[in-house]
Image (cartoon, rainbow, N blue to C red; front, side):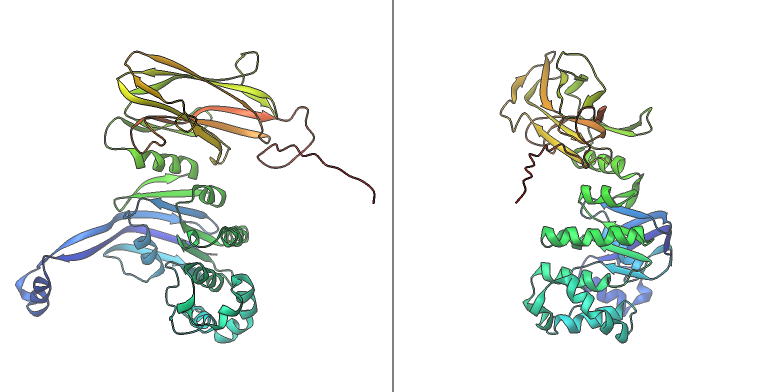
Length: 407
């Protein structure tokens, strides 16, 4: 079983004012330092227990890839310690280590040997590697003729041909076709069920929340959030639009879930309720029933445009459906301070049995990355129950018409 312990980790690179400064420091080391240090990571500490699935998220330049390189030993830390127990398989960079003039088969052998596998093992596993990669005759052609998706297929197939104690994946699965992405994530999930420790860097929220039980958020080289994926991803989403003004906070609800709220507060949700067709407030809806989401918005400062967005999320935080009044052509122009608006959103509950939440967004355009007046996750929580439908599985009620006839 694999585990990872990171303590006080830091990574800095030397920066020189010019190539001559670099040369002078090398030729005359007694003349003092002629460089400054650029810290990519600083004082990073966390542990990943055996069998745990952890995601690492953050903006570009946050230090995610550098952290994985330090953990796998392809780069050395400036400060701190890393303890890794167990056999590690890593997919850090697409086709890393592949020679463009060698065939896929030859590169598979070399890549497998770099992962610590014997030639005899690799030869025995080659049929499985070929079958999983599904690149056909390209297996015996030079890698330089491969597309990026084909390189990813081969690299992933080699890295996961034997179940490792620790599997580390850095964004590589974002390349390639949807079919192979689904196939790869299914293998990752299966290895997780068998006890492999997973460390994954990805921007795919659905994949993270489906696979991982925990997420770390890196910002400016430091861990700023460490917790369950929904709360961390909600905070990350808010951080993307945060410009240093207004609110950015997380509050622990009575039900134990973490609510994220952000925005400049020029407009806010004053009240939100789910109602049945008779207008009565409900916290439980039947599968297939017609309901109304009623949202009252108060404008605190003049805004040029006002758009309400909403999304319905399942218990894992994955969005089942979402849209906004920009897309529906119902944007409010020149909303003045003191005005209040009521939005009534009528929809059928074509959802599976379970607990769902509503997120709201008050923005000026089609997303919260422009002007974010208020973004609120877990603005409302409700249950869906099956009272009068036959038993079905899944997150959506998609009533079929089944015709059965004897032939």
